[in-house]
Length: 235
Image 1 (cartoon, helix red, strand yellow):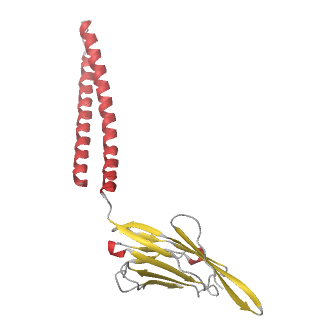
Image 2 (cartoon, helix red, strand yellow):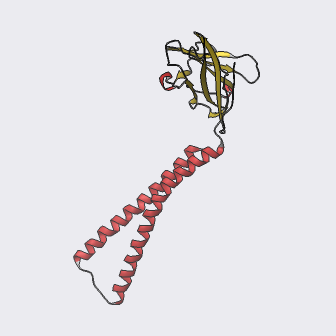
Image 3 (cartoon, one colour):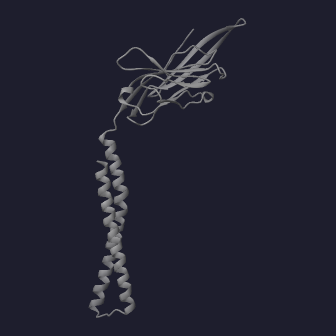
């Protein structure tokens, strides 16, 4: 006897399967549930995780096996890309050679793998099969992988973030500089009207202030140059 069902939840498939074992005159119901993302989206060159988890009524032993297969969109034939039984056995041939890594933990019910340096040619259907005797009867969840290039919108977001990080501090410095220059101009105007003469100490302080203002102005110019150079390098 075998039953299967799908759990609610967008982008995730749940496959509870019931098997019956006749042992010493008693029918024992076995249950193995496998979860896998129905759709996974990734980008060229960025590691992708294919998640697969399971729940078994039996304790995990060295007889537990996990098998991942891949089927390209233009073919009905699936190829094995990963096998697990006590140890990890990623494929040593084909397009996924040296690119499949084990990221799961069977004692936590995790049978996930990852794909390094994915390309558009990796698009297709991946399946995760778990057997934990005596829980061996189950349907196999499918994961559709779509790998694409990062679009202009993503690159624009990076440029925007970089611009904000550089522009905001520069704008604050410029604002402070303008405020200080305005206050200084107002003070000089007031003193000139009253015929006030500066002491040697005040003249020295003004010289130091002018050097500080010039330094801040150069800092603003440097920030602007950094922003321009970062923008050009991004494109």
